[in-house]
Length: 516
Ligand code: TNX
Image (tube, rainbow, N blue to C red):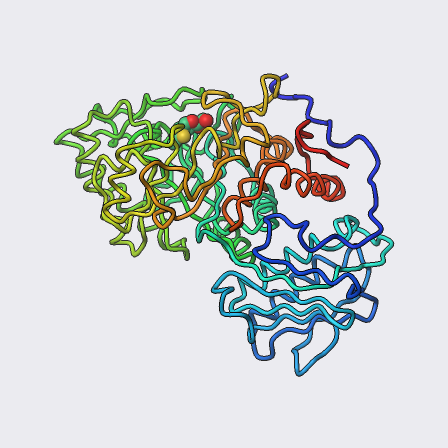
């Protein structure tokens, strides 16, 4: 059953269509503040125009994105035009927003004559578009013309995120996923206002990115995966396509090359990274902690040069500020070798013009204060993380028993792992990132990231089953200011189910959620 688990429970009963417009506060993540005006419903029609800030190519692009979202189901032309003192239609402006919305938030005003969005940035307009999408009827998710009316509830929304870093990770090393799957994952993140996608591009089982200085990393190191399938890798052109697709959705890619452990695919491809100068065989199992770059006196310069070459090529492919150098579970690397390795490779990221992210084990090597440790432990108390926060480092939160999307929901979940526990929908929601870590204040938290490891996942449907409904729960934890209760949240979460069905998204129909 591992290859063909029964995850079809989301595709059974008929959709329930709602008559009244979706209430302004029924959105995920919950907006900062909402005032409803029941008599002020707006209806999008055949003649609606999307007006965007005059002289802003960026606003025009967001307007075009909105048009692309709304045209299939409405069947309306929804042309995008420059705004010049307009009082009707859908209006996206980069002027006049409440300063509180900052660089990522927006204001939304809905009345019978227009839907007005104001933000300071394209990212803010884009976030508003995702809100607007959830305020439209479920049928807006249809890929062909549906019956309206296309009503949006009247009122005012003021909204901006709590944390700057709201991410998810996809492990494309344990199983390789093609470009189309990664793009659909990006679309899922965009819906819930996440703004970072961390790609775990290398591990024992595969190396997934073309590196010109060492072509065998991808062509050989990428040639298999867990279970022995053919694997694959991204050429630089395909990778750049993914980066651009994400950027158009205001999502920044964070590429990870994991080291000095989790490196068998590299050790199999580049012989001189091994102490005996012999290439390792490819690996298709799921053990961790058995591989390491060689740090003896004869090899350390070769290894550091290798990392430098890889980091430079990766940085050249990366418009975003971060490169992730892994650093986790290096249990085959001696403590002195680990410290020597990290102390030499961590500066290579800054030399390539980027900031370092690493799994929190890198704290042993005392990274500089601009580095971001990603905490994946399962307890709120960690002395290395506390000390780092005291030194001024910002922490990225991925506690494995809350944020790991590869954990099973319950004992019978056919996919995933359970080493960090079972994570039902409620568990993914019921924690507060701002106060989670003992001795670490909210101002030391960079944000949260939800990792999806893929030892057991081979298809898009598997991925979707694991992320829905937990991803929206975690997204709300990263965005929302108010700490709502599960009982409030689960009502809003339930309303997402019919949208996923309509969009042909697979999900786990958690019994904790009152699906309609
Ligand atoms: C631990 S979490 C790992 C990964 C595994 C994952 C499975 C972390 C930094 N390392 O190598 O894929 O558990 O849940």
